[in-house]
Length: 258
Image 1: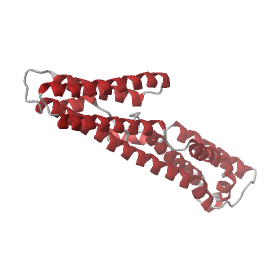
Image 2: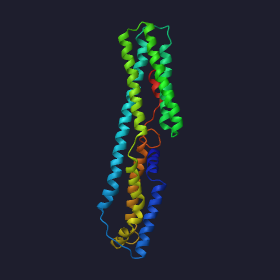
Image 3: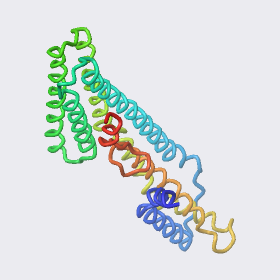
């Protein structure tokens, strides 16, 4: 029940109340002064609903891609840990424990990076991340001194390369999102819709029973702003604000390779 309530609050927020209030006020003023008009309903779908739904679909696709790349990163990191633990057959080396600790640091830093909104901090952490990739690469080279064959070391190096590619794909998803112009276009029409469609709502007042005249402006406002809120929460799949966001949990990974 608590989770359902939390999801409801994320969709219905202060923006919903503001737009709904503007819609009701606009309809009341237009009816009071006799300003009525029969605007086509399809205009709402073409100008607002279609772009917003397209944005939601695009954001959801990016989230699914980000999940796949996170799985790639995690899977290859665990494969590298198993290689350092099992391939040499040596029990007198701490290479596997150092690899495990480095993987935990990388995931923790990656989670912090993707949640951060400070670009200066992002650039610093990105440099740290690539330094850690360099440490991981050097760590795999130590396997040569533990008797691991060069062909197997080459395979582990490919795992490091795939981790870098997965991280870079996740970074691109973080930095490049739904086209800004499309988002601004949708928001502009959502926010001016209550005022512009006031005459249309006023023209329908006589079609409803008393006390139900404002049902249409309220419903239109709730539906449109809720769609916009859903898109906002899906826009950044890493910020862990929305219910569908991605959680980059370093402890969870370390528990699997304990």
